[in-house]
Image (cartoon, rainbow, N blue to C red; front, side, top):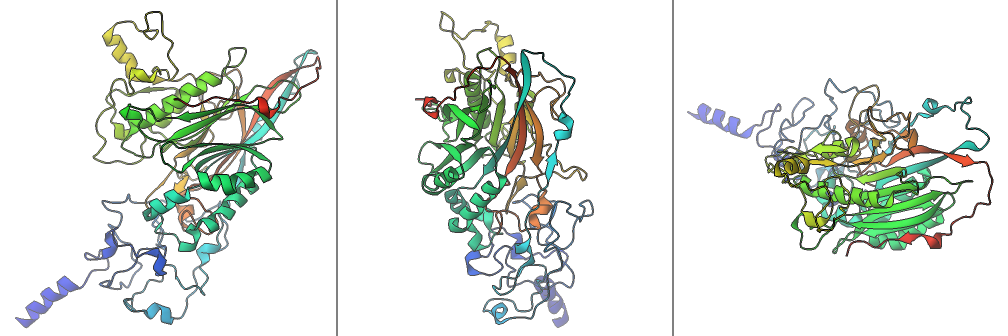
Length: 555
């Protein structure tokens, strides 16, 4: 009888190493507070942990709460389908973590002293963590060899070809207020790397090293922008424009450009909030600038747009409506004197993944959304919620924007032009969105050679691509979409700064970390604008910045 009870007691008390049943680590609510200094970037082993004799990976830690990642960050074992080499990472710090003697700090009250957690980083201040010394090494991918000049191409004595090269940086720098309001996303981080006093110098250093001609920044906190970011960027030679989010939100979007390379001709802030319209009751914003290159002759104006769309994965209808407003505003300001469209660069955090309906709509210019659940528009996550299909039409007619993402013009009767009166035909039209821009993505979203997906954000709960640089490709560009219309004025992609995989980022403790102070990676691309110069030389007159037209936002 006694032996039988002992066996029952053993089964109820001892947890198997292969899959611990009572391990509190399986519950995402039990993360040890990072401010205590106990394993500040990894889950805290609970008191009933039974030390296994093998390298152990929790089978269901990412169960109902988190998606199973391709690489468990704190495990020494990698899935067989993931290559163990990181060709775009520095080898410094990749050596095995040195063994150390047990210290008094490890025997603090409440700590199970016989837990073998050598695969987790030590929190001792005097022990140097190898991962903290590893810096991201992102190589430059050069496409200029695909755009070699053709010496046989002659335009005659009247005209001669000209070119203008420039670089664009898109970067979500992570607002400090949003970081503190969503601290559960940064349980993997050490405390000191989350302070603004630590993050700001890193962000400014990275921007300075990138040396881009145009900056598109998201999650720029307004007080930090006015007091620190703007003065610093102006000292670097940038002219800065900013649009804060509506309501009481403290952050917004900024576009900065080198005053030595561009003249500002137009500023258009874009607000997505509409009073008394439930679909558009969010405070996200966008910002559009028209920039004139400082060159001899008359080069086409470049339209630069920057935005940060709604995050909520279950509200794809709101995201599409916000995007439609931005595209309508771009259509309104991007027409040139010859009725053609100027080159467009569209940057930002779109909170949508590659291949999602929203992403495909931007690239392909069309989206048939009939029967599409609102939770599938962005492709951020799969869940049982957000299954309601998109309505016909997505936004009400009072918005004044058609399904072609342009502002409607009304006829004499006060009705929008193009209304046929055929309800069946109207329904087919309403279930399809269009825009008239030919846009390509700077990034292909997969690492060359390995086929591993790139990511632009990586923190405690997710690793995805949500940030993009879209542009109007010129004829013969590397990434022009087959069958796409070729704009009269387009850009050629000369190069880009390579992105990383989730595995690469977890090798350096994800984002943010000691060297990268945002939870997003920066995106950098180099473009070439080709145009024609008339040889009948005239004195060029620079347009002073004071003549820039600043258009008001919606009332």
